[in-house]
Every structure is written in C-alpha cells, then in structure tokens.
Length: 383
Image (cartoon, rainbow, N blue to C red; front, top):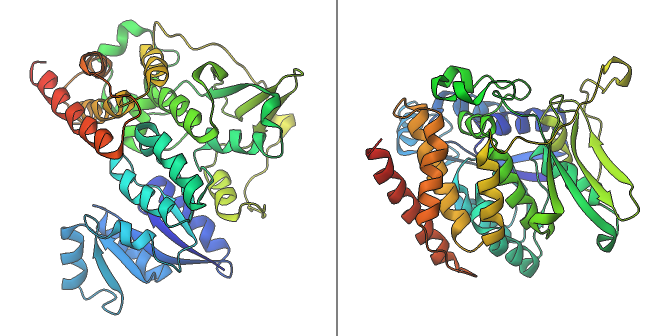
C-alpha cells in the first residue's frame, strides 16, 4: 500500500492520477488532496477517496465548513500547510500536479523529507532544478517524472551506462500553430490557441505549447533531471505524438519510448515505479499507424525555443525570470489584455534586462522570480 498526496488534484494531471489510483484501491491510499479554486470537483473527490487531509483556499475552507463536509477530516490552508502535508511520515509518494512556481516550496519540502516525488510541474525544476536535484541526492528522495517526455527519457536511460549516452531527442507535437503562418499569430484568439491537436492540458501549458515555450522549459527541465548539457538535447517535431522521446547512444543505437497519447501511462509508471502494472488502456496498434513523421523546429517562427535554450546555457537566476515573465504574460493573454504574439516579445524584453546571479541560493531564486513579475507587469502596462 502506497500513501499518496496529490498537489493540484482538480487539474488534468490530478484527475488522471485519481483515475489510476481508483483502479488499484488495494495498492494506493489517498492521504491528501489539494486544490485552489475548483471547489465542487474537490468536494466530489473528497467524498469518493476520503483523504485524511484536504487543503483548500480560504473560499474552499469556508464552503466545506458551511456545508459540514467531512467534518471528521482535517481541512487545511493551501497557503500555509502544503509543506507540512507532504512531509508527513506516512506519505510515500507526492504527485506535484499544481501549476506554476507556487509548487517550488512544497516540492522542496517533499524532497527534504526523502519522499518519492512524481512531478508534472515544470516550473519548479526550471527555476530551481539544480537546488532540487542536489537536495534530492542529499536526502535520498527519488524523482520519477510524470511529464510524458521526461518520463520517456527516464525510461530510456534506465539500466544504461551514462558514459555511453550521446544525445537526447526531445519530441514535440508542435502545438496548435504548427501549420499556421507566423503572419497570423497576432490574430489568434484564446480559443484558437487552446485547441491543442493531441493533448488535453491546462490553459497555461497549452498556450506555452503553441509557441514552443513549453518545449524550451522541458529542455531546461531535462538538463536538471538527468544532468545533461543543453548541447546534449535536441528538440524534434513529431506531430503524431506516438514517440514521447528518444535517447541516442555512442554506437548509434536509439532507444525510443512509445505509447498512446494518454497521460495515465506516465502517471501510473511514476506511481508504481520500479514496477509496471496493467493499465487497462487502449494498446498501441502499430498496423493502424499510417506514418511517424519528424522535422526540425522552426526557430524563426517559434523564437521562444531559442530563448529558452539561451537561458538554459546561461543558468543562474535567468530561468526564474524566464518563468515568471512567461506566467505573467500568458495570464495577460488569457484575460484578453494582450495579443498572442506579444507574449514572447514581453518575455524576451524582461529576460534581456535581468542581471543574472550565478550559483544562486533559494533566496536569490525567489527574489529573481519576484523581480521578473514586477518587470513584466511594467512592460505589460505599456502595451
């Protein structure tokens, strides 16, 4: 029996994680669920999975108390109690499914408590990956990524000699704008951008995917998770999203991880690692695949990818600024305050102004995150 905490149980990753857990009720027990604003869904999840702890916003806490929902359970604050929850001795696995840089502190707390962490959150590893991985080594925490590309790399590296690794090929579906001319980017609506051709994801990550910013974040994430240099990672566009990433070795052999486009596959692997259990999902039918196509990313059309690779090489506090600027700019786009094409120009402007600190400590990262937000808001005010 593994005791599970899910940070962000009402998002797409959290919902799918609970679907996996529900198939194996004798193997998994939900200790804690957290959510910010989807009160009615977490109410349903709490009734079904009966966690010991529910972590909510002030609005959610008021709602639960007024309706006298599970008064025998502990209702905690999402602003104060996440780090305490993930550090509980009885917790075995922490699924980090909450979005944004807000995941950093509970992620670090789980690492320092020596837990097995299954992160779907990119931002924490982007802004503080070196610190997280160093702490994981120090405290004996195991990080098994949920993100499909990182899970693929994790699996392809498993059991192989790192000295024989030549290159990681990080695949990208291309997002909603793969076949859209750049000249039309300024007219793209929120609805256009959120129409991802392959994956059903949250709003913010879908916007990032459309401009390949998300793939750039994954380059930085892979560098941290697997101790790679930026030059050891090559992004390749693969619209069918059947191969989730590949690892090439010095003899020319390439090991690829393949599967249907269903997040329950990498989620279940992260929860059951090092074992594999039946998923009861649709199997990959090779005979029905008409083709598997690949091409290089167009960095003129999608300059965010190049910007991320530049930031990846520079390191320091620059990734924290990149992430915070992107979070602020994407939020502005989703609320109709700026055009889609202004997301990148805003982020690039803020990143270019930052004076990075090398080998930053946690306080430097948090300070850079705040600086990036304030600088971005000033840029947005002028648009």
